[in-house]
Image 1: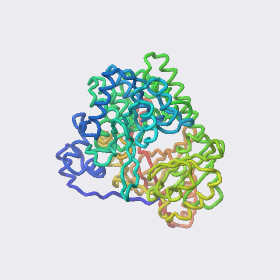
Image 2 (image 1 turned 90 degrees about the horizontal axis):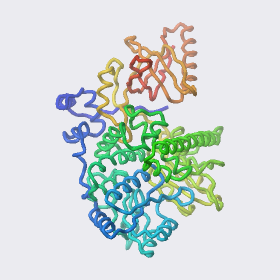
Image 3 (image 1 turned 45 degrees about the horizontal axis):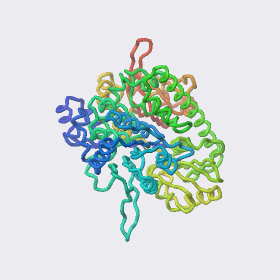
Image 4 (image 1 turned 180 degrees about the vertical axis):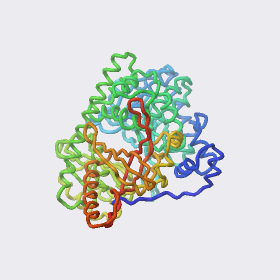
Length: 587
C-alpha cells in the first residue's frame, strides 16, 4: 500500500497572498515548489525573457563564438552532429537555422541509433572528412568523445562541443579531474567551476544560447525559443528558473507557430494550438519526434522541421505519427511480455529481464513502465549481434543505478548512465552473473518498494471550485520540477462507479463528501484493479449491514486535481483522481 505524505512547508502565506494578489492556497503551493525569497516568487509568477541569463557567462562561450566567426569568415564547411532524440533534433535545428542566418555553409548529420549508437563515432568523423568538412559542432553530445575528437583533429577538422551531459571524471596522480575533449571550445554548464547560474538546461537551450551569443537576428532567436522549450519538456528537464520561462514562452509561441512541420505534426496528432500544453509535447508530439530515432532515422524529423512545402510537411508528419503508433504497439507488447515473466514467482529486489523479439530501441521505455508498475529497479535487455545483450535500466529513489551497476562493470562491454538510468551491453553468458550480483548486493528493504504519494495539502472539494481552477493556471506549465498540485479529500462516500472509454480504461465515480455534497471523480489508472477492489468492498459492506452494523456506502480518501470538463457546450468541474485509499470497513 502506498505511503501518503502531506507537505508542511512554512511561510507567511497571508503576506505572500497579499503581496502578489493570489490566494493563500496558491501561496502554499508556490512555497511547496521551493520558492522562498521575494525574487524567486516574482520570477516564478511573472518571469520573462529579460530574466534569462547572459550566455557569455557559460565557460568557453567566447571561444565558441570566436571559432564559429573564424569559420564563417574563412567560408569553411560546417557540419552539425546532433543526437537522435527530441533534444538532439531540436538542438541540431537551432544551430542549423542560426548558422544559416549568419551566412554559413552548414549541414546536419545525426547518428543512427542501431548502427552508430549515441553521439560522435568514427564513421561520422570519417564521413565528415570525406565530405570536406572543416568544422564540426556537436550538440546534445560530445562531452565524452575525446577519442573521436582526436580522430577529427588528425583528419584536419576543428571541433566545437556544445552539450549538457555530465563531464567524464578520471583519476590522475590520485586526484579526480575532468576529462575534457581537446577542442576549440567546450560549452557545457555541467563543467566544474562554470559560473553560469543554472546548470539544468538541455542541449537545445545550450545551442540556443550559443546562437544568441553569436548574434543571430533577434526575430529568429525568438522564433527558435519554440524548439528550445519543446526540447526542455521532452528531455524531462526541471521546469525551474529559466527553463520555466523558456517553456512558458515556447508554449505561447507554438500555439500559433509558423513552422510548417510543427504545424503539420500538431494537425495530424489532433492537437489545436489553443489547447497545446506541456502534456501534449511530452506525451504526443515529442514521442513522435523520438520515434524516428528509435525505429528509422532522426533525419526525417530534421526534414520535417526544415520543410517549406505544406503537402510534404503533412506527409512527413503522418510518417512520424505512424512510427510513434508502431512504437506504442511494440511497447505494449514488450510490457506484457515482461509482466508475464514476473507472474507466479517471488519478485526479486532488482529486476533483470531478457525480452526476446523486442526492439532494442524501446528497452528503456519498457524498463520505465515496469519500474512504475512494480516500483523496483529494472533492467530490460534485448538481443543484438555477436551474442551480446543490450539494454536500459531505470531506477527508483534510494537505489543509485549507476553506482550499483558500476560495481560489476567487468561484466559489460559497454556501460554508462547516472543514478536513475543507465545503458549497458554485455555478453549473454554474463546475464545470470549480473542478475545474481545486483540482487546479492542490494540493500533495499521492503519499505523502499512502496510507492509514496506526496500531497500538497488536504483540501475539501468545496474549496476547489472554478476560482481556484482558474488561479491554478498561474502555476503552469507543469512537469518535472514543477509538478501539478496534488490535493487530498477524505471521508468520501462512493455512490456509483462505471468504466468507459474506447479501451475501457477510464472510470467515473460519483461521490458525496462528509457534508453530503455531490462530486464527480475521473480516474485514468488501473481501472480494472479499482473495480475489483470496489466490488469486494461493497460485498463486505453488504455483509456488515446484514450483521446489524450501520453503514453508508464504501468510503475512500483520494488524491486529486480539479479541472474543467466541456461536453456539448456544457462546462462542469470534475476532479481527476491520481491515487486512492479505500477506508477499512468496520462492522
